[in-house]
Length: 216
Image (cartoon, rainbow, N blue to C red):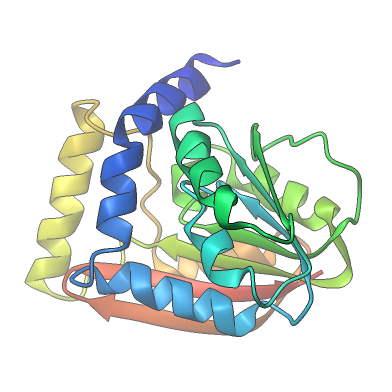
């Protein structure tokens, strides 16, 4: 495992509980909008792979809509919390694995939908993550993404958020994070060889985010 991955693993192990609490907080609209967008875009009875699954929030929300779910995350702490929710999985739809979203070692074309929620901005090689998602997806499958765009500054509050994230990254208070604009992120997605068939921008309370659905 690379030094960067080791740092990311330790960071998210420590932050797993806080991440879960923040994501479920009603005062964090970007998380709730992300969940609703994903729920809307995921296909009925789909076989889903969630790269960077975190604490399993998506699996819990989707379990009544999908056929199966495989969640992969580099953090043992995140996976542990996600497995705690698996107790409620009466149909055994959920599978959770510790692993690297850049190279999962899973078979080709086994998913109808692949989720990349809040992960591309944390990767130093996002093109590799996109290629892995494409490899895992069946032909004409969907890759559903949600990505922070900290460089898309529109308001003073946007600028303040961007400065805070920049300082946190600089002083090693958070992992590496890439500062996308909407345009640069869209270019990165298009260069993956997949086609953007739907997108939505979020600009709220200093949060800038691009939701996009890619067709393989």
